[in-house]
Length: 262
Image: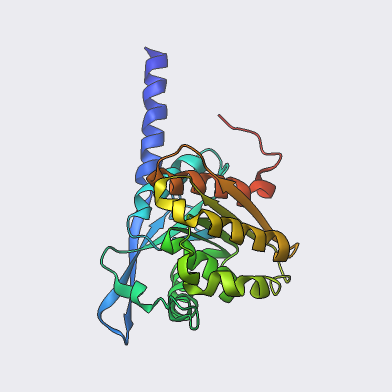
């Protein structure tokens, strides 16, 4: 009976930790949009209690990404922040039109300018961030991740780009990355670049090879990168696989030597 009671107590404690994961919102007025731009902010378990602690920020541009990111993060961080450090997760609310700022030609970067000048400074002001930021994305959002790396490299420290759209030199990624990557020799950065082998990506196979070759030839030593080609997985599974792989890669140095506390 005593053992049974202890098991119930453990289960209750874990459930309480999950419930602590609280959702907030930030919103902005923008001259190009009549409605406010609303973003969801997920604060990790213990945020309110640990008032002196500062946190990593992870941003994903897909409004549905918070459903798997918060759950995966809760699982991968609850065991002593191993392997995922406690993180504040930012995603746009469904219907947020801010994506219309994206310039697919790559000649201008108004969406990234909004991140730099408005969104991220306000997040830093409202929440206890520690200055380390990760940007994740799938498909065209992964193209935005790559654009941030070469055009606004000081916005984020870690990048997870899954199955980026590279057709027609979207955002000038293939035509300008070689030159712009050479400029990134000022501080450590991490990029996890991945894709699958589904029919949805068949038209991108050669372009993925081209981008990987650009990284091989032009990435400076300060840019730590990993390429992962997933085989025999469903297309919609790829962002989840990549987030886990990317998190393990980005935080590998932090976690080396840590023991499992289970």
